[in-house]
Length: 474
Image (cartoon, rainbow, N blue to C red; front, side, top):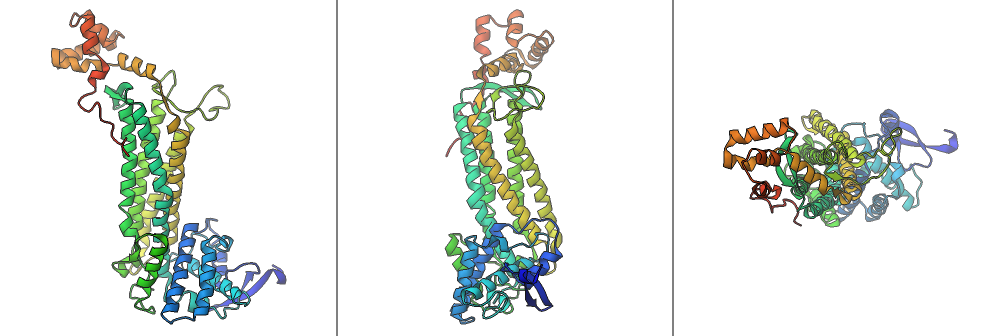
């Protein structure tokens, strides 16, 4: 960089050249140079949550008489600008950095200090009158601020992004369950013909899976709403005012409308990241549910003429560069890939327990990144699945009737009339002679054609839950 392209900033280790346009300072610049690893930046929701903590920390510290009100007001204005997204380009630190997240905390401290000093009429890099540590970070440590920001970000994004998408998908599946309530088809277990079900019952099962996923995610909220803020370096609360934690967290909770509260035990809140592992466990379960639904949609629509073909998925794009007219189940394929990625990210977050050593977990940035990425991917995939696939699914009613007629499931009610062994003999004969069960029982004289039509009606084989469509309610 030429002289005009940078300025000199200082920290406890000496001078550092910082780009002239940047709001960050020396410690951020060192982190940028030390961690050229992935190009993945700390997720924006964490940056927003961190800005919110700093904003209300400044307000609390001013109320407690710990920093000058004029300085606090400048920090508050700067933090609101960051929260609004005005300075997103000024948070360049790689996710794979120091495991405490200190580099990101200092990135925020320096940006807010420099911007606050500008607001007060001073130059960037002056560290006066607002100092990144003495004022912006007053009463805080990276060790309690970063896990607090992560919890706020994850809790907020679950409610803002993922849960509405899953609710939309559940309702789309439930609507199809209602639409297909009268479509009788063959059920399958072990990938073999079983007994009849309705297509509506299948889709009702999918809707219930998704709704139970929502319940599982909501069950993580109580632990995510515990914040480590106030524990400072190791959980003792050294260098913070006794009222700082409760006051600051209450302000954040009021702003977001979420019942955040100080952690039950600050030592646990700093030393472990169990709440994130619990959350990605629930996300992993949601991913497994979506993979099951997507795979079933692929199977039920397979063929369409040479396989199952009981449903027709929306045709969205050509499926082959060589085979004209081929259309593939691209949306379910996308969903299975997202699900696999989320499962892998759950493993990475679970391995974050390796960073829980003594009084501090030191894998926080990675755990935050993969948790929030899982939320983002699952939310996007769920919306696309609902909008571009599920709502456009059609039932091939004729194909469903054809397959159930040719299946050997129709022999099941005969077991009550002729016994299991005789019924099995009928099934094997139908299979060997490539005939329907209806044809065989008439040929064997067990039933008249009229009796066969009455006894072997597929809709009479649905059992006592014939009218049950799980998951189709509101």
